[in-house]
Length: 432
Image (tube, rainbow, N blue to C red; front, side, top):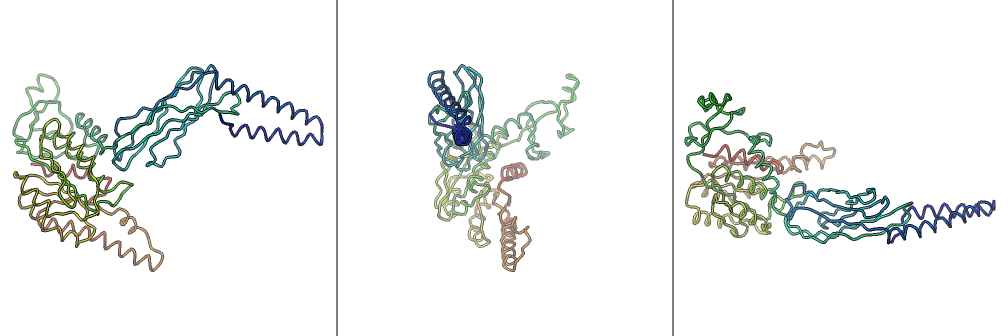
């Protein structure tokens, strides 16, 4: 049981009245009467809170959270008191979120319940620990409250952004991928194998209209063709120290992992085979490109365990592994980060070796903080020097992209929050 702030304010007011009673005696009697009422109120609230009922509560959330996304947590509370109660509900969220504002105040009628919701956005993969719910209950004048400890401690694993996969899947089924910024790529002459007949939607090729089916159904119908053959798509993720840089609270490695997960999902649903390679000081993950039912789960579990390393990534080991284990010409999507032109030049010979046998797409990040700094107007001489340095660094990343293109590699220099969409558009454009 706890005394609330309201009790101390009322007690202070009574004390002031009784002090004033020294100057005018009737006020002393009034103060004594109010004090007696306050004591009676405390006794009544104690009896009601302890013997008049109880509060039930529980927490409901997904078994695993999606990294970088808003994950919903639901708190259910129910009153078994025979009078209205006021509740202050606090949930012990994992300490990594540093959330001290998860406290909701509500009023419940007798024998009723309510569901409260809030959202958490993790920016790191791993295991997070929830505590228990604390519900502070008050009645009548609310001078006293009783604490109920409800729910159970709970462990939640944070996985790469699987919520994004569900969103893409729903849009794909409803032919609305363009809402996410994914362009419709059409390659006449490649689609040679008939797959199905479907309703015409805006953007379909008029030459694919099936006039016999249209006449039968009295609405436009088109033939759908699928690719004559599939290709292997490997997402290759650099785990070196340069991938520890953060953007919007997430490391470049986590942004790359989310994009690789989405690309693998889309490529499998496009009848391609998806594989995964991760490397730091050595190649530590190699999943052969497959299109079977369990491939996405295998990729998800592999990505969940990845962590950045403090060493520079060993591209020589990557070239050796790819040369030995990827025999068929494939699309290699390399997620990396180049801090300087010299860094890119050191890795260029290895990337060129990969490009001799495979199609290579190198994806690396724009430094959004530097770009924002360049847009600011300096006010001091030191500020001008800093701006020139920042402009040179931004230009160097563009220079790296141009250098890679000169040697026959496709490149993407993107902001972190545009990564997944940009990679998908580039994949669709390169797909053959």
